[in-house]
Amino acid sequence: MEQKINRKKVLVLGGSGFIGSAIVNLLISHSNKYDVWVLVHRSYNVQALESVKVIRGSLESLDLSWLDIIQPDLILHMARINGSGTRGRRRAARRGRKASLRLIDRIKLSCPEVHVIYVSGTLVYGDHGEKTVDEECALNPISYAREYIHAETPWMEALDAGEMKVSMMHPPWILGLQSWFGEFFIKFMKRHNQIPLFGNGNNWMSIIDLADCAGLILRYIESEKTNDIFNVFNPNGLIKMRDFVKLIQEETGLEIKKVPVEMITSTFDRATAEAFTFSLKSTSLHDELITTYTYKHLNPKNIIENNLSFSSL
Image 1 (spheres, one colour):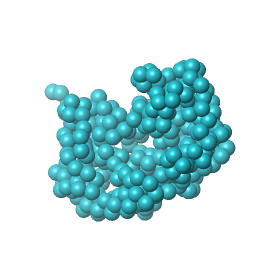
Image 2 (cartoon, helix red, strand yellow; image 1 turned 90 degrees about the horizontal axis):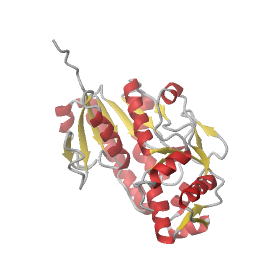
Image 3 (cartoon, one colour; image 1 turned 60 degrees about the vertical axis):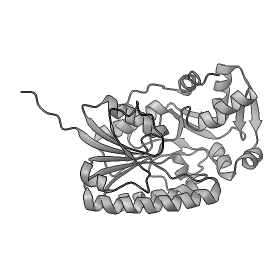
Image 4 (cartoon, one colour; image 1 turned 90 degrees about the vertical axis):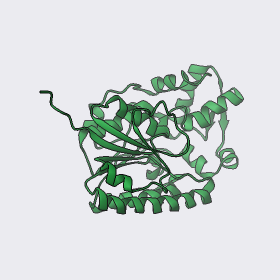
């Protein structure tokens, strides 16, 4: 008699977003292990999500009775309420905090054993120059994280208190056409036929391809770890901004255009300038996860080649 496998029930918040879409695709490819529900806000690719259960709504409007119905084993939280400018981000973060507290209260009531994985980023650590930063580093949020961290705080407090199963993921610079790379590099190159070098280029970047970011988060899920912080990173992805830009030049043949901090600030805002000039060398104390994962795009050159191949440059 064939043994029945109990699939893990996963609720994905923000599953139609940049990182969320990649993780949902991985979960779908492991359909023998995972039964997936996805919260989507506004429009989404119906065909891509035809094999999962779709819940329409936002983080704020989600009918929390779904938790009673699903009784999820895992909640992957990648939903963020966005705002424009400092004031907009502050308002969005306040709304996000309220939504987080509402969700936490209902989880404690409906499914207290569920494991929540919250995906954040390394901007929460701040600028560390030449220092290598692991999960024990104190938080000093800069750029967009200066405001958005207020929406994350309830989850960090729940983790610290040990009152729930919570894990925080901190991926670094994720390359993908829907990320900062597409918005600030690909669009700039198409518009100006030049490659932007933001700031002086001396800051360290830890870069990772979207596929490997999603793969490592799945690797963490499969490890059954809980109540942790995990810096999702590629140990071969460390590169200075100026060398990152030179690799793009080798692939495209375009000339490099220096964009000083003052121009970034005046064109966008201070937060954007900080995001492109902060320096951080990411590493992780979860060595067993990093060393047992097989990277699809191992080094900066491979990562850049992969993303440029989809850019129609």
